[in-house]
Length: 340
Image (cartoon, rainbow, N blue to C red; front, side, top):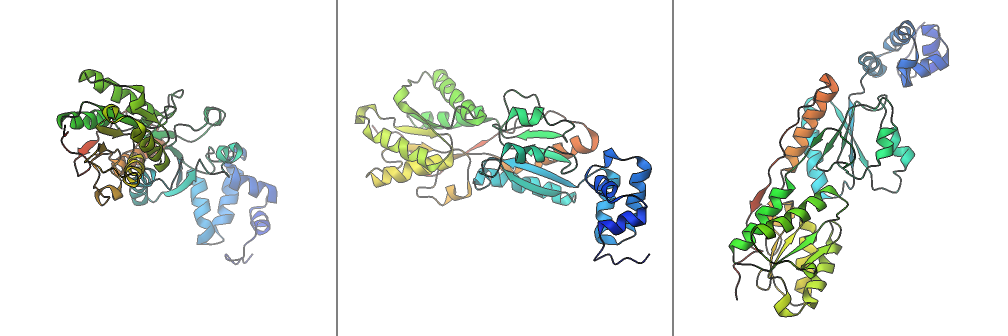
């Protein structure tokens, strides 16, 4: 039976393998549901049709898709993009494809999200969103290996790779204190997210260590976005001059950008009127005006380490817990000594 590999149909595969069309479809979509003999018959028929379909047959034999999915809450956020770059660097060298799933998109329904938790679709799942539904994961029977990176779900004991947020905020606060600032405020991330919670707790703990005062009016909680910084700037400007923090520790660079830009519109200048430390060290921080003092997160390194750990889980079913990655302080022009 002569077959053109460019125009092969599932009916012709079924005829060649001497099985039904339904059996071929089941073998391709759910190989565990057919016998080993039947699977080999279908694979042999597929392989005989040409290279383009031969890749499917090869993956079925290995029971692998050579694909992992990265579930991220916002791929447009530079923080997550940098992590994904590190992931792709490792996986590309291992000939593994990366599928990106933005968990914050309106199209990401529960049903859609559940579809990723299938061994027939991907070999592994890397989750950068600590708010992914616990039910989706727990109800996914026989799911591929799962690894959390950067964020984790507080109620799930799954493998995790992260960055030491507590150390990052401690470095920021101590830097401001070393410049003579004693009234230090915090623009916090959302407390329902692990990084936002850890950074705010570390901020308060470090103030206590240094015997520095804190006031509720000096802490503004929001999302990791420009609007949170804008709102915090208005709140800061509305305080009496003697009650304003002389320095601000921000939980994210985008927050800091919104804060500084809004203060500029209100007639204030950084660091003349208030020193500001960001968190992330996004690409824009070095060319922002003023260049932003910030906490550098090793995002690409996190992505590379997470990708390698996920590969170990896929290939060897082994996860070796690693210490949290350490952030570092990058001093630029948005902080200055306190001028009484």
